[in-house]
Length: 134
Length: 139
Image (cartoon, rainbow over all chains, first blue to last red; front, side):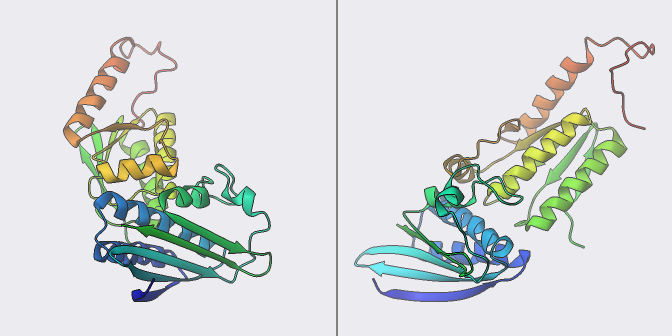
């Protein structure tokens, strides 16, 4: 699964969340996604970017364009060095929120992508990977 | 500071969101709109989101908040022009926007407001001072 192109974007302020959306959109277009698929990936990116900023205290995202044979995909790898998540199962449940959100961020983002990975331990930050294939 | 304009159009307020909103901008719009509803006494607000390429849970919640606040101020909000891809994504995300009235475009949204305003003003008696619960236009 070779990475054809990648880009790293910082997530330090609210404007950066908008830039992550735009970056994700650009890669989805490059991968040949339909408008609906673009919108799903961009929305998932927005949810996780906001989590990275608010709960993770900032971090970054690596956006990758993948090609597996004829299949194209976009992967977003979010990293923060925040407090981490103690109870992942609870965090992924719809309606659970520890902050100002609706509690749809993680669970909702998971539904919008094909592959979802989260890796987090208290005190060790959080890594979230979202992948969508064309 | 960056702001989303709120236009007065006859008895209504019209908000056209043309930019990719960061969270603070969305919050500012919520505050500005509340202020304008109260100042103008407008009973109907159209929010045109046809240029919005994505609505995530935060922006969705902001629409829900604005609709609730407007209701308390005796105004009604209709969100118009949502792109099909945005609608599909919202539902998959788990956001069904309860309590928010929507219309396909500004024209239909305005018709919707006109109808509900006519319905809400017809049965109430005129301004003879008896209608205690009848919130007139804000001063």
